[in-house]
Image (cartoon, rainbow, N blue to C red):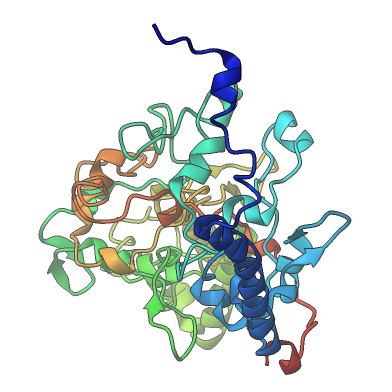
Length: 421
């Protein structure tokens, strides 16, 4: 029987193994020396050629490509080893107002996120302004946020809060009935006609520059002179061809009395002449048979009183909320129209890519009879096109602008061409 003792086993170990040269060990030693040297020579060669590619985390966005090899333009070294990009570096070229727009005490107390929190560079030739939804959802995703800061937003349209609430009402004071104005063969100044939405609602064309296409953004503001005067003329007297101005009540009163005074001064014989059958709208109603006035002043006073009664109690009240004055003889107070031009105050909507659609496709105006009706479409209407399965973009940045550019400040030039050569 063979015995195997520790002494005999130890005698099998070659104590000079590591002293004798070996090809693999020699190769490992050479590689451990040569690899760092090659790396240093490569970095040195690129540095001598002025290339900073080895230090870059990747290509920058298309808008910043001109400064891709000038890292110091954006990266500012602080006390740490890394050279971060502070907000000041971004504001040097474009002053983006801080985000978010504080609406609660918690939001006011919280510091605004840094530019690089949402605008992540070195991700290729991307559009840096198109922030991925993930960055938005990180903050606007419910959780422990206050209920007043909107519901959870995860995807559109399933998890998107409604554009308006059921209790929302139009703050406008104009008495307007869309259904009446949508009727066929409506009586117009030149006979029967059928109005379309675009008769009054016209896109507001904005030409950004000679290199860019015109955009429409919001619709033009509705004005009496542009959209209403053609049909709703403010005639106040058969003897006066000019309509009353669409102004404050005191301005209207002054105009009516001045127009009547100028007319009777040129036509003194009208004091003793009775009116013929009324013809013009809204004057086609019988006036009371008063005794003929005796003086031009009495003629003006009578007709001015009749004209003001017509305007305040029949013409203006058709559309406006008219509040009689507590002072006898004083003109009434007419409420401001308060027409709201933009309902999506936290989002941006451009009519340009939607002009091929009929207005009624999104806005249910044909059945609206009240001014208080809010004719905004819902998220499901938008999702007909703007949904992942339907092709059109449904990203947060498609509608939401996270900077209030109305608060932008002028940029002070800091660089010259030598910084980018």
